[in-house]
Length: 575
Image (cartoon, rainbow, N blue to C red; front, side):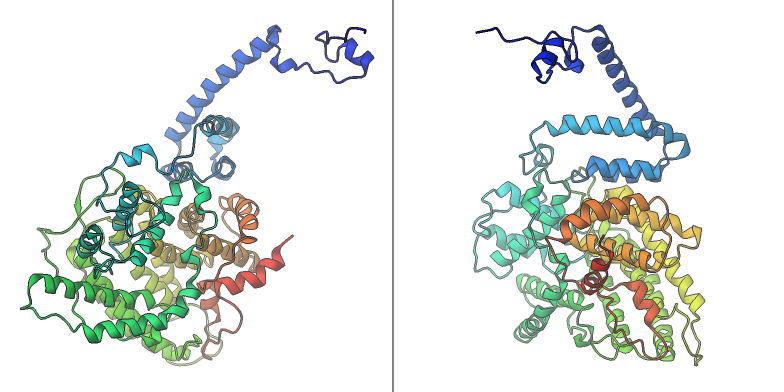
């Protein structure tokens, strides 16, 4: 039997040519060759230079550029391609030449990082933090028996969500959860699992195990299903109110605490339903929380940015809660006076002017009269910033109804379209400023879900004003945060898609910094996920809502709700 021919090392070698076989030599891996060793030395030198350039770029770039870039890098669910696209769209003239090298640095860092095991539900560094509260997993949930995981998630919720949506008495909830009694008054398996779900949605931003959340039905994108339950919720609250009258001051401390918890819940239901069934709302005949501190000496629950390390600060929960309740009352009154029924058909243009001009001084008085501890500039705690953003979002929604020129002259003209537009833009800039402050102080990985709504309302106002260059920076700042949050909330994905389609439909030129990211969003995020998951959300397209309100009554017959809008236009836009 003739010996087999061996490859001689040349490409292609003579033996392989005569045998008509594939030549298997790989020049790039042949270390016998002098040029291969030289190439490896050049690559190592280049890697060192790339690292130096990356550090220099982070040092020399504008603060806004660095913050946005770090937001993307810190999010473990952001792909390297998205970071590269951001650098492509955002690099300044002085950085253009080094952008390819920066991309290569990130490529290699990402490749090395991917070799590490990612099968850890919680990061070791985070587990080393002492949770805000320690509570048991059993008997409240069957999803896990890990007390540490449950304590971690409950602590996240108490830190980032509960302070603004303070409908559950913190102390009584923790007390009953620790008791392990499933028949306790202020804790139940349903409540615990609801909180764990909410906290998991916050945590998935940095989760090393993203497939756990791939098929989660994001409750933030199912508000139509929530709407169906509100009638039942209202009846339950009515039953609670009738069977638990307001607690008398002379009752014992335990009874007073339980009475305050019930009052909190009833006020909380009002806030939870204010935007979906406002015409059914009545002011709860319940006291608000007692404010147990003055402006200078806060005797309050401490707040710290768990799981990060940070100094304890007074949370001012009672002041935020009471201020929020007052703002909700004004919102309910405005909506009831502006809309005739649940079809969202507004009253006439002159009628709207009269209502809004009468509500505005009271809103301004609310803002000026805020307790000192929660006034703008006094504290940058997340829930306090959330409260201020809610106020500015309220201003935008009210004045947005008046910012489009009406079709027919009518009286009175108390608020001109020009004045309404200026007011909306000013409040949108305030929201953008607070988002910037929030991001610089706390990051955005645990930002409250309510902030998504305030951000989006400001977003659509600025979309309609991009012909003015002075609005570009605020729009870009909001967009960069929204893009990152779209990885966390499917609702935010839908809102971004609605914004993209609206700009396309209305021929609005977006800032060049956003265009490459939107193209990537459409191709690599929206197209892939929209086929698997469907939105069921009545979140309105505020740009269209504001444009369609006229002095004839503002009938809204064409779809402006998020799910209906996307169902109609997303199919049209598919290639």
